[in-house]
Amino acid sequence: MSQLGHLEAGSRHDLRVGLSPDAPDEEDLRDDEGVFGYAHSYETSSRYDGPGVRVVLFLSGCLLRCTYCHNPDTWHLKDGTRVSVQQVLDRLKSFAPALRSLDGGLTISGGEAMVQMEFTRRILAGAKDMGLHTAIETSGFLGDKVDDRFLSVLDHEECVTLVTVDPRHSGAAVVQHPGSRHPISAGAPGIAIQSAFPEQEWRALVPGIPYRSEAAEARHRGYAASHDEVIPGVSSIAVPLRVPGGRPAALAVVYIRAAQDPDEVAAALTEAARRIEAQLG
Ligand code: SF4
Image (spheres, rainbow, N blue to C red):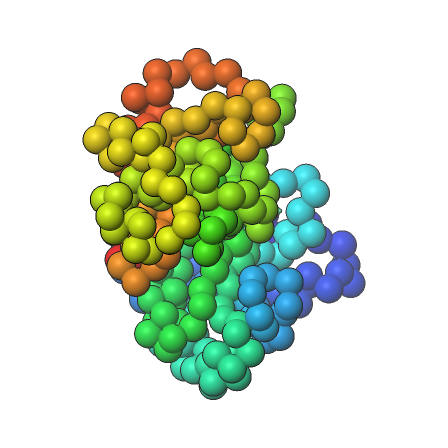
């Protein structure tokens, strides 16, 4: 149920309330086509939402209602403006040459971009067609398959964490924060990344970084596991993520004590990786 009209009179958020009264409540949205969606606003020169200079598209709709939220005017689709993917891409197109030359791109934020999953996917695909770097800022509204996961890519000889997702109601969090790096030779994500390649191919790709024997095992088993390698006392399970044209990457979960069978966690990660590959492929 939309909660309109509770903002203080005179709030800057007053400007974006009730713009689309016919929009569904966000929990009822059926976004199978994604040709149209609800946008809150654009920012055209952010340096804080990804590499280079970014255009940030704030989408409407979020189901979490965090008590500390400073963008409550992004919670409801009814408060957004209904726009087509084409309108968004036409607008983005005018910024594309500048974004490319400034090593920037498009970041989709919110609200929660995943509420309008298909709309978001179409915009990201259109931005990719323009040769733009793309990113999303998400609360982790991606599913509940694993407790704590992160996505890493091979960046020369290091693993770079791109996205982390924390459970909402845990007593402690153990994650590598986005942007953190560690050597590719340590930890399950690095092993998983190596395991996507036969040893010979890996040697040609990253000369000087030995192919771990664990990578050969992981290649056979389908997932990598490590303990005590990146963070003392912490274990990790990771699976390779293969996106055509993208850098070698891994999807991983880190934990201190596992209540679940590692094979089950790995199966959930593998399923999530396949879904991500299908979305990005
Ligand atoms: S996830 Fe973000 S947009 Fe949604 S309520 Fe929390 S802080 Fe606000």
